[in-house]
Length: 151
Image (cartoon, rainbow, N blue to C red; front, side, top):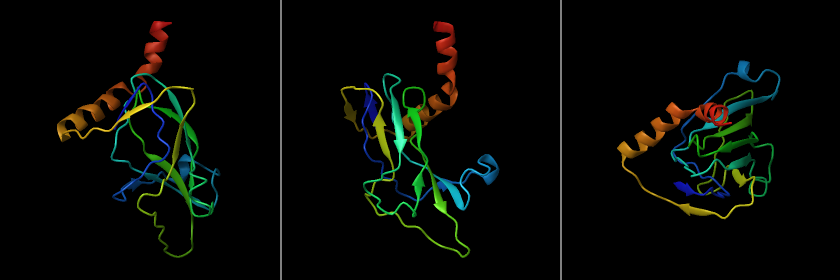
């Protein structure tokens, strides 16, 4: 998905079940009784300008806050293109499974600026996807340097 001039994406749907966990040492004492899990999103969002978005829990679509919580934060899609969802799930003494319904939003992305929005969805080749993904890795934190040099 390529976002032009910013984007307002209200919900994010994740398929495939891919993810990764951060060890508790990365968030000591922050979420006692909960475990972290990052839902890896297969899509990239690209914005022409660095518009900031609030990442939030889909409160109105998941009325049971004890099932999982999306960790709030702020992101943008000009300098980085990933839309992975950091969430926490309650820990249980026995093995348990949490299912997310297909099509149910797992996060809200809300622009923090009053902008006009145009969203274009594009299907790209694996080579183009890899090129765009590599661009993210090469330019991560580049915006800090660009702002320092440009000011």
